[in-house]
Length: 382
Image 1 (cartoon, rainbow, N blue to C red):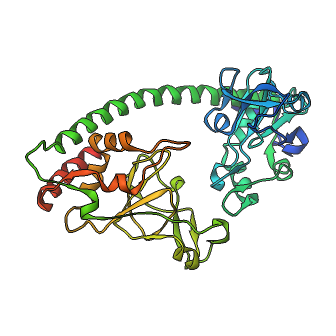
Image 2 (image 1 turned 135 degrees about the horizontal axis):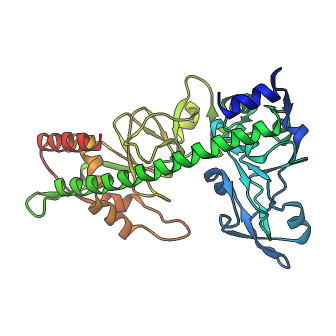
Image 3 (image 1 turned 90 degrees about the horizontal axis):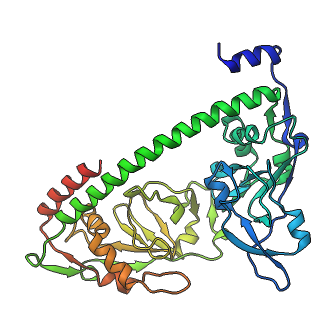
């Protein structure tokens, strides 16, 4: 019998009671933003990304700078044993990421994008126990049930307060936290080793891909714009007026729908109306789309009919000259990626326009040779 089993038998012989989170702590979402205001103090800002990426937070994690007056700093403080939660997200599944503050962080406030949960009596419940509960299936089901929204989903602090959690003796809570902390540490160590191996494999794959796609001056080259149609996406505005849950809606492909590790766009979280589709850019299965800002230049093969907004560039009608997979590999090659980096338009946000993409020079091989190269690279990628 484990230590945890012994404690449950000793302290909870008749089962465990449940309590609402509002009985044990207070939710607040009165954080600050990043705007600079005159006569206010410069502070550290705990933000959404900090919570999303970390289970535990100490003074080394907040990096962002904001400003706030004394009253705001007092009301939005970040103190030891506080729990911070992501109350909204583009997907319901991402609501409720939780982090525990390990130490009071002086001169630090939290962003209005996140929610603070401060325990009324830390001697009755441990902050880490609450944090782990937010990742449990039971609490996730409750969050999915209450989440509301159209393009972004969330729960009010009243709904968070109504969430039910098991409330065992604090000694049991501490034992559960110890087990999960140890397990999390082991997983992180394993992930570190796997990431090292994956990084090495990616370097090997990148070298081999570029080796296979390096033809020097022996092969004819063409400009991408000469053998394909290249246009920018378009978005009906305001987009919230065109989001639909009807079956006849058209898939609405957003940057957040793609997996950076994947070759394909497999599914979308949202659809737009047929009227909205008329104001957008239709893509069909087998087309290539290219992100044109932020992580610009990353190509994806579309596996379904849909619409793209102006954060994408559509490459189509190239099939007489290129196979989709071969063109995908050419666009991911270091040579083409370097060309896009060297020519991207810099400003507030770096931007890749259609003229830059049209002028990309690529080798023109027979479809049979393209097929053989794709087979090798597909096997290597797997």
